[in-house]
Structure formats: C-alpha cells, structure tokens
Image (tube, rainbow, N blue to C red; front, side):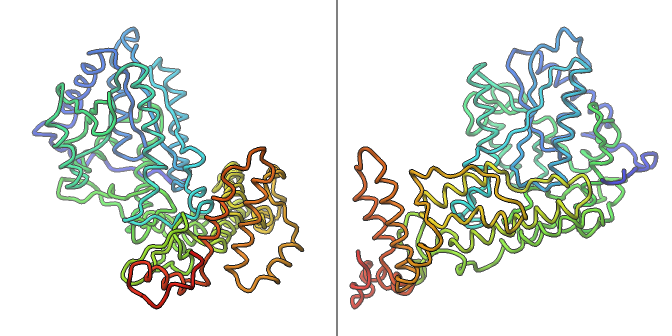
Length: 495
C-alpha cells in the first residue's frame, strides 16, 4: 500500500537516553522487563493499536522474552487491539495484519504471546447508536463513543483476566511527553506505586500499569523503531511511511537531533470522528497518496456528520420524549427518522462505491455489518414505531441487491402495507398526528399478541405525551409555561 521509507541511519546519530546511548538504554530496559516478567505469575496484557508507541512497547516485551530460555516463558502475555469498526481503514488493515503476523511468529518462536482483536458489543457500535437510536454525532459535551467503542471492550477483557488470575499487569505505551494532561495523570498514579514501575490503575480493580517508555520522547520512539527490526516481521519502515502519509505535510523530516520535529504526531483514529475540527490524518492520506482516493466518500460522509448546527436534523424532544430548554431554545435530541435514513443511505452508497471502484484490497470492505443492519431495523420498527420498515428498501436502492436480512417477527411488527400507510398519512391533519397514530397502532399491535397486557395503558400514555404538540414552537411554549415563563400558554399540549 505504501512504499517503504528508508531512513539513512548512517547520518542519524544515536541520541542519549538519559545520558546513555540508545543501545545501552534499551538493553537496560529489556533487563527490567525480564525481571518484572519473572517476578510472579501475574499475566500481562499489552495494549496494541498498531501505532508507534504501542508498537515499540510490544516490540520491547517481545525482545525481552526472546532473551529468556524457553522454559522460563511460562506466563501468558495477551496483546489486545481494539477495533472500533469505524477505524481509519488503512490503520485497521495495518493493525489486523500485524496481529496475524504476531500470531504466526509467536507460534514459530515459541513465545507465550497471544494476540486478540476486540470489538464493541453489537448494541454499542457506532452505527447502531447513530443510525439506529439516533444519537447525534459525538461532541465534547456528548462524547458517547469512546466508552462504548474503546473502553468497554478492553476493560471487559482485562477484568476477565484479572478475575481469573486475581490480578493483571497492563503494559501500555503511554508517555509523559504526549501531553500535559497525560503527564499529570501518570505522575499522580506514580505516587500510588505498590512496586517499582507498577502503578495501580485508576478504574480497573486488580490491575497494575507498567509503562516502559513513559519517559521517552517521540524522536526516541522513532529512532528505536528504525534501528531495531520488528520481531514479528511487520515493517517498521512501512509504519513510518503510514505516519508520513497521515501528516498534513507529506515531508517527513529526517530526525538528526532532538531539536528536529518528528512526523510522529499524527493522530489516526476513527474515520467518523467529529471530536476534532478536521480529520487531518484521513484528509492528508487522501491528499498525499493517489492510491487512497477511494477514501474520499468516507471523508465526505465524515464532513457531513460534522456540521456546526444540526438542529434541523434532530427531533425537538429528547430521546425519552421530554423537553429541555437552554437559552430560550429547546435542546434537540436524537436524529429524526429522515436524517437516520439519509445517513444509512449515504453509508451504504459509500460502501457500494468503494467495493466497485476501489483497489483490489478493499473490494470486500465492510463499513456496516449485516448484524448491525438487523439490529438497526429492529430498533426502528419496534422501539421507534417506524412501521414503514424502510431499511430493506434503502439497502436495495443503495446497493442494487435485495436485503439479505431475516424477516421480522410478524407477531410483533405491525407489518403495515404501503397502501395503509399512505391512507393513514392522508387522513392525518399533520406530521405530528401521523406520528402519534402510527406509534399508538404499533404499541397496540405489540401488546395485542401478549397473554398478559399489563403496561399497555402506560405505554399508550407515553406515546400520547410525546406526540402531544403541534410542532416545535408549540412544544417550546408549553415548556416555558411549565417553568412559569409563559402563563398564556397551557392549552396547546395534551399533557
């Protein structure tokens, strides 16, 4: 995918690592890793993203264990990589190939290293929440993605290991030089160290953190990666090339001393990320490499998600139907049905276009899985009462193929014919009335097939309360009346 970038190492002078040569510092660190590994039977979990910091960390652990006799390599070392399912496709492919190479090399070299690719639970995936439930694209004050996509999968694995063995040691490629916040956090945890170099994890009981490269600079990380070959056979030079391609400036400066800035500051994460003003890494990859032109539809979709004011795409009610006022305006909630259907259509069209026009290695790319589509369909029909069941039709329009999904349970779904839906729209005076009647019919249908219908009246009342307004202006007036701000308005709502 990328042409290897060969750094003329003969002119790169080894930089002092705390006053030592790089080789001296690394040999000392390898001895420390071996000592910690042999100290007890506590299993290790190494965090691996495929980036520079996690690569050098995993590489140091591998090199240290390779220096031990085979009979002493008895403690398992789990290497975990969390795939959010919306990772930058280039980075995700890189990490997945690296894990496979790691698995093959570990078996060949008799290393106790076990790679694991972790993914979010189906109900936690990005598209199930955004397209299915209608969560708005993540923002600093609504950062719902990190916990679901990254933290939960890794924490579950770590806690399972800790519960099985009583304790676990996390080996992480975190560095104080990454940011001032990272430095403060690491220094705070250092004060609670129970053993030399091991800090208690702030939120995972039974977990101790070991950060072997915590004092390294970015330049030192790259120098070590360039001088020491990757022990599982994945090219570190290609890794450098990938970072260079993800930089806005395609010129990756030659590291000759600590005053020279490194090209290793690129942040490559989810291609859907709206937590940054621009996805500079994705944009730079497309700009710097003609072979990556196929990613332009991803960039376009990401930019469409990241708009300053998306109120027109979202319901004026919160997810539970409640109203909230901020600065004399209603706080908008989830994406509307039309917006969610549009996001799905765009996503499927991007996937279809890439499969048809992209290079061979992305002809089977999956931007959204069938399992996600099945769950989104059920959420739309059963939770949101969208009896039209439009997902199969959107899929066929966007892909040119019939939806391969299983039919919905007809005893639970309303299974409305298009003629009935058209008739219902005709007899309703406005969109809110249509939504109200549609939801009432769906709720009644679901309870009608139950042996016990307890809860029906409450469910119907919730529907009436949610859809009791003529429009957003009516809802705002009622919310102000409820707060005592608009005494003349109190009759516009049913509740």
